[in-house]
Amino acid sequence: MVAQGPERAGEGPSLLYAVKQVELAVRARLDDLLRSTGITVPQWTALTVLARREGQTGADLARNAFVSPQAMGDLLAALERGHWITRTPDPAHGRRVLIGLSDRGRALLAEVAPGAAEVEERMVTGLDPDERAALRALLNHCRTNLV
Image (tube, rainbow, N blue to C red; front, side):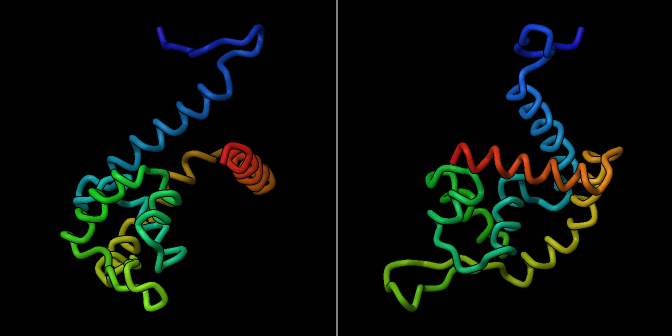
C-alpha cells in the first residue's frame, strides 16, 4: 500500500505532500545523475546558482541555494577541494570573499546539463508549453509567498 499523505476531505493528498513527493523524486534522479561526478545535489545546486550569478558571498549563496550558512561553509570547503569554485577578496569590502565558478566548475555543469534537462523533461512530460509556463509561474509565486 502506498502512503498518500495528509488527506483533505475529497481532495486527496495535500499540496504540501505533493510538492514534497516531487522534490524527493527529483532528488533521487539527481542523486543518480551526479553519483559519478563526485558532487552532491546541494553542491550542484550551489554551482548552478553561481552559474546564474557569480560573485556571491557565502551568506548570499546559502540563501540562494536553500541551505543554512553553517551547511554552506562545509559545502564550499568541499567545492574548493574539488577545484569547482574560486574565492576572491571583494574589492569593495576588504573582509568579504566572493565566490565564483572555476573553469572546472563550468565544465562540470556543462557535462551534467543534458542529464539535468532530461530529469526536468521527464518531470513535465505530458504538459504542453503553456502548462509548463503556468507551472513554473505558479511554483515561483508559491515560493515568493513563503520567502
